[in-house]
Structures are given as structure tokens and as C-alpha cells.
Length: 304
Ligand SMILES: Cc1cc2nc3c(=O)[nH]c(=O)nc-3n(C[C@H](O)[C@H](O)[C@H](O)COP(=O)(O)OP(=O)(O)OC[C@H]3O[C@@H](n4cnc5c(N)ncnc54)[C@H](O)[C@@H]3O)c2cc1C
Image 1 (cartoon, rainbow, N blue to C red):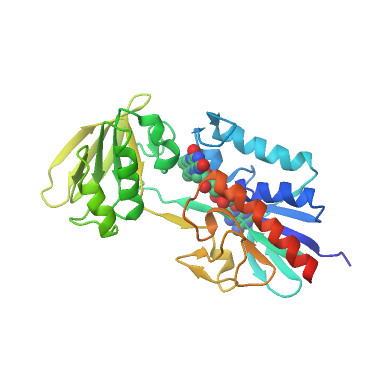
Image 2: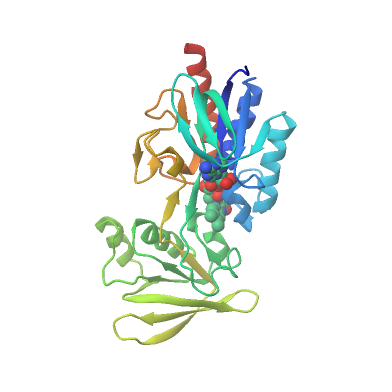
């Protein structure tokens, strides 16, 4: 009978790949399961990453490849598998479509997906004017005009952040009041270069090689208008990829409850990256989580 792995890492975005590097260096017998054909996670869909220290302006796809190559160089074992569910116990059973794998510890690093609007132009201009992350891409729109679509905390925070660098920011919201925290709203309303377009939905994003305008409709009056701009930031929500772990670990709004050490409510199961409860979802924080989670897994293995 085959021995259980010391560690199985689910997901090979920045969190899972950083965990793979740390696990190889800790000499843990590790397997990484990734449902996609290519490792890198959300980073692969990023046109340019300009906030990962030491690699200014690197293409997202290149960064994804580099992270994977690093783990490969250290001899990490990968399998292309989608994890469907987990059976918990002293030895944990990881159930995939055709195979089941056994392990003493687990790192859940399945990330998140940014919700799309589904309007014409959104896909075409993704990475060349349409963004789902103001922290990541705001700096590319310095002294330009941008719009944020959404009405929650993230949308308002994005608009405030962009107002520091853009000449003009529109906040486009389909209702006549924002869902965001009142304190955030006060900060937003005080900004002279932010204009809020209430009761308004985006119909399409248009342009040639880059974004040139956003077409809008006022849902109360039916009036249509076009905004000339260069950037569209879509902040209509982010969904953690945690469905396979329902009932396994405690969650909050679908995010796995875990602190910086990755420790979850289930002994021997750790969470890393965008899928866990945290303040800042970025490549650098995901990678840090991967390192911390392996350290926690090592401690657990030493004690059991
Ligand atoms: C468009 C865009 C631009 C961004 N730009 C930047 C930027 O410039 N700078 C920055 O710091 N951050 C940026 N981010 C955020 C950054 O990409 C994320 O914070 C980071 O990728 C999170 O890493 P992760 O490993 O936690 O999750 P992910 O990157 O989401 O990776 C999770 C992996 O798990 C796999 N997976 C999911 N479910 C399963 C399953 N059941 N079984 C097996 N595998 C599974 C997925 O296929 C994926 O490969 C951007 C995000 C987006 C969407």
C-alpha cells in the first residue's frame, strides 16, 4: 500500500507555487493538484504586473511560468486534477474525478475569480483598458480618465485610490445609493475629481486598439450617453473558489477563515492566498501565505 503524502497543495497560483517551493526545500513528500492545464492562476490573465518586487513590468503569463519553473527546478510533483471534495481524518482523502490521493496535511490554495459584467468589449479590452484590480493596474492610468463600475466597499475604495492618480474618475452605480461603508462614502464625496453617475448601467466598452469610450444607460430615465475615457475598472464582486471545501472548514462569505499562519478550523488543513479571509489579495500576499502555510504544516507534522 502506498504511503500518504506529507502534504497535498490544491491549486497552483502564486500561493500554491510558493508553497511548493517551501515544501520542496523542507523535504516534505508533496503533491500539487491543479485543475488548469497551465499553472499561475489569475496571474496568467494579467497583462502586466508592476508591483511584484524585483520584477518590474513583467508580463503576467511570464511571471506565472517563472513561478512554476522554480517549483519544477526543485523537483515538485504536479498532477492535472480538479479536486471535487475532501474526506477529513488523521489521513485526509482528496477526491478527484478518477483518482483519490491520501495525505497527512493539506494546503487549500484555490484562489478566487473576479465577477464579470458580461457586456460587449469587456473581454476584448481585458488587460488593455479593462481591469478588475485598481491596486494592480491603477498606475497605468496616471493623468487619464477612468470609470469604476460597482457600488460596494471595493468599488468605492477603488474610486478613491484612482482619484489620487487619474485626472477624472466616474463611479457608475446602478442604484441611487451606495452599499459601501458610510465612512468610505464620506471620503469619496469629498473628492473633487470624482463624479458619481447614479441609476446607471454600462452597456458596452468601445474603442480601437485601446478603450476609448463607455456607453451607458440611465435605468430611470432611459437616457443614453457616452463617456470618453481610457480605463474601466470593474468592481462587482469576487468569488472565492471554495465550493469543494464546504462543510470541511469554517468559512466567512465563502472565504476560508484563516489568519496569516493559514491555520483553519480543521487540524492539519491550511489555507493560503485569495481563498482565505484577508485584507489584501495580491500576488505578493498570496506567495507569503504559501510560505507561512508550509511552515504551519511542518509544525503540525512534527507534533503528530
Ligand atoms: C486581471 C487581474 C489582474 C491582476 N493584477 C495583479 C497585479 O498586477 N499585481 C498583483 O499583485 N496582483 C494582481 N492580481 C491579483 C492576483 O493575481 C491574485 O491575488 C493572486 O493570483 C492570488 O493567488 P492565489 O494563488 O491565491 O490564487 P489564484 O491565482 O486564483 O490561483 C488558484 C489556482 O487554483 C486552481 N484551482 C481552483 N480550484 C481548484 C480545484 N478545485 N482543484 C484544483 N485546482 C483548483 C486554479 O485553477 C488556479 O490555478 C490580479 C488579478 C486579476 C484577476
